[in-house]
Image (cartoon, rainbow, N blue to C red):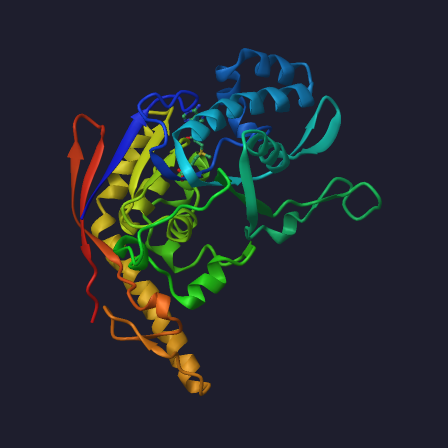
Amino acid sequence: METTHRVVVGDARELSTIGDDTVELVVTSPPYPMIEMWDDLFADLDPEIGEALATGDGQAAFDAMHDQLDRVWDELERVLVDGGIVCLNVGDATRSIGGRFRVYPNHARIIDAFESRGFDPLPDILWRKPANSAAKFMGSGMLPPNAYVTLEHEYILVFRKGGDSRSFEPRADRRYEAAYFWEERNRWFSDVWTDVQGELQALDTVDDDLRDRSAAFPLEIPYRLLCMYSAYGDTVLDPFWGTGTTSLAAMCAGRNSIGYELEPAFRDVFDDRVATVESLSRSIGQARLDRHREFVAEREADGDPPAYEAEAYDTDVVTKMERRIRFREVASVEPIGEGDGYRVTHRPLSIE
Ligand SMILES: C[S@@+](CC[C@H](N)C(=O)[O-])C[C@H]1O[C@@H](n2cnc3c(N)ncnc32)[C@H](O)[C@@H]1O
C-alpha cells in the first residue's frame, strides 16, 4: 500500500491545490485568536487587527482574527467529502487589553462558524493539560472576589459535513483492518483526555523547546483522531500544518495527508521527523499491541477473558469487529519533487 503526503507552503485561506470533495478528515490546530504569540501573524493577515490591538479594542481584534479563520473554514467546507469530519484543537484565551481582563471564547466562536456553514457539531473532547500548580490563581491571589480560574484545558471540537455518515462497501478491508481495540475505544471516545502525554509522546523526536515555539501538539492527538475518524487510505488535511505532526501521524497510521503552512522553515523540521518514521510506526503498533495484551491478561486474571481471537496477532479481543485489526508499518519513504512532499510505502506490521 502506498500513501502520499503533500506539503504546500501557502495560505490556507485559499486551498487552491485541493479539489472539491476530496478530503475525508481535517485534523488541525489554528493559531489561537487573542493569544499573544499569534498577534503578529494575525496582524500580517489583516492590518486592522494590529490597529485594534494597539488601541486596546479587544473585541474588535477577536472578531477580526476570527474573520480570517472563517475564510479557512469556508475552504474546508469546499474540500471535504459529505460525511467528512473536522477535528479542531483550540483553546480559549485570557487577556488584559484596554484595561479589561476577560476570556475570549475561541471555541464558542468556532462552533458558531461551523454551524453557520451547515456542519453538524458532534460531541467534543476536553483535553486537560498538566499545569504548573504554583500558577493556579490569577488576579488578586488569596483575596476574594477578584481572582480568576486558570484555564488548564483545550478543546478538540468535532464537526461533520452534511447530515449523513460516510458509507463503505460491506466488510471493506481498509475499514475493518483499521479497527481499534475495545479498551482503546473506551479511552479515546471519553470526553475528557487526561492521558495524552503518554508513551507515544516519548517516541516522538520533537523537543520540548521547539514544541513550545511552534505550538506543536503531541503526536498522540492527531494519531488518535486519525484512528477514530478515518480508515486506511483516507486523506487527512491539516491547513495549519506547523511542524507537520498531523502528517507524521498519517504516515504511521496509513493515511494520505496534505499540509498547508505559511512558514517555510517548518519543512526542515519535518524532514528530521520523517527520518524516524519507519521505526516510529513499528513502535506505535508494538506499543498498542503490548498495551492490549496487558489488558487481556487483566481480564483473564479477573475471570472474564475476551471471547474472540484476533486474526493477524496472537491475542484475544473483546468484540467480533476487532478480529481483523492489522497495523501498518512504514517500509520506505521517498521525497516527491522539490520539497513537494513524500511518497510512503506501507506493509502490514507483523509482530511476534
Ligand atoms: C498552532 S500552530 C500548528 C502546530 C501544529 N499542529 C504542529 O503540531 O506543529 C499553527 C500554525 O498555523 C500556521 N498558519 C497560521 N495562519 C496560516 C494560514 N493562513 N495559512 C497557513 N498556515 C497558517 C502558523 O504559521 C503555525 O505554524
